[in-house]
Length: 412
Ligand code: NAD
Image (tube, rainbow, N blue to C red):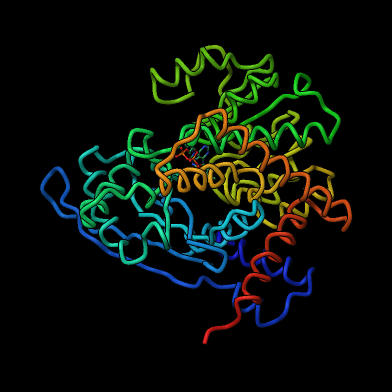
């Protein structure tokens, strides 16, 4: 099953469970708009390469389309469709007035120079400008992109407009209208939700051991903040491999090693293990924070953790969900657990539109309030309906998008 088939199956199950009207089901099951662009970039060696880029707007009933831009070799139309649909549910679940979108370019940013990445971003921004605007579609960072990518994107659209457009994209540097706290927002939200989950299970943070898959924006910040909250980070991985220390990793020392070498592997105070071993290792909590499709049914059968907090989008496939449910492993779904990024992206958009910027403490406090409330809402529905947290989150989110669609009516 690819990511899009997973996303559609999750939606079909939610629609069936809530008895969603057939017409609404057909409307919400597919993306509203899809843009595919094949565009040339002149590389440093003088040769021209043609890249494929995508922007998909799944649903814009509740507000402007919102969702990140991914630079990764796996990017294709189906992956972007899945990520866009998940954004529609995430913004609805958190009650943020945005629709769902996603975009990306199939490329390997790690093998490209800064100059090549800038050219690719500026050309891609120009091509997607027919979709993207501060009123209609607001991108953000995702795998393989960062604040610098957002700055190039914003500068390109601003140059075309003839004036500065800080609200056209989020996750930008603070000097050009970014929000304090945005960089850490997804990991901070994951941490708030992880602590809520531990509290529900009656486990004190100091008694929890945590393994984190992925060491980028989401994984690394989640690991740092969970360690700050008292949890023991016993394992972490990146694309090159994983490391394990049952006594807990010294996050400051590991951070220095990561900055120095660019990877967590070969860290001297831990044992090397495989990524697969990390996923099935003995720990209280697993935070998958890399890519989709990592927890298959086979992996799920071997997992030893008590709770999974999905930092990544779509890390658990539906068959694995069934296995984890049978085995009594709590799974906090992506559309809840990693929503901190889009929450602070919303704050950034509001601040940029008003040209009035908030203190970091205000951003973090509002973020924590929204995340805690969303967890409580999902937990209450799961309790009432005797369902998993994912089914509860979907039933809340899909209902909100369906109701908005119904009340607006079918045009014309
Ligand atoms: P990133 O590019 O900053 O980091 C990705 C990390 O995953 C890197 O450390 C990379 O080495 C690692 N990785 C890649 N393939 C791996 C593999 N097979 N095994 C182990 N590690 C692997 O990306 P990110 O922004 O941290 O995003 C990670 C996930 O979180 C994605 O699913 C993304 O969609 C989701 N997400 C991101 C944000 C955000 O604000 N950045 C918000 C919500 C959700």
